Length: 110
Image 1 (tube, rainbow, N blue to C red):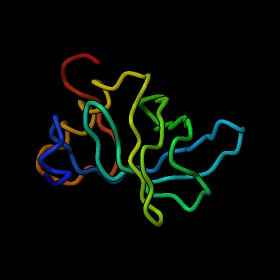
Image 2 (image 1 turned 180 degrees about the vertical axis):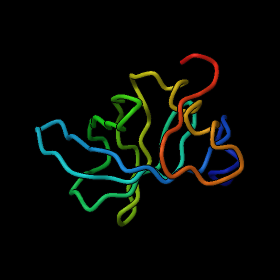
Image 3 (image 1 turned 120 degrees about the vertical axis):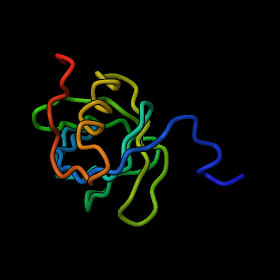
C-alpha cells in the first residue's frame, strides 16, 4: 500500500514559512509544503530527528505542537498533537485551487 493510499485525509498544498522550535530550545526556520487535519509536511535545514517533539509557529495562525514522524534529507512528516489543526486546514482551503503562499483568513469567522 502506498503512502497516498494510507492517508485518511486529503492534503492541501501550501508554501508557508514557519518558525520551528525544538524540545531543547533550538529555534530555526522551516517551510510547510502541505497540510491535512492530522499533520504537515515540512522542509528544514535544522538537525531534527524522527520522534522529536516540535513546535511549529505559522505567522497569522498560531503554534502547533507535533512530533516528527519521519525525515528524508530535508523533508519530514510532522504529526500534529496539539493546536487548532482544523483551523490550519481552513487557512489553506481559502486559497482554493491555487498554491497558498501565505495563510488567508477563512470567511466563516475563524
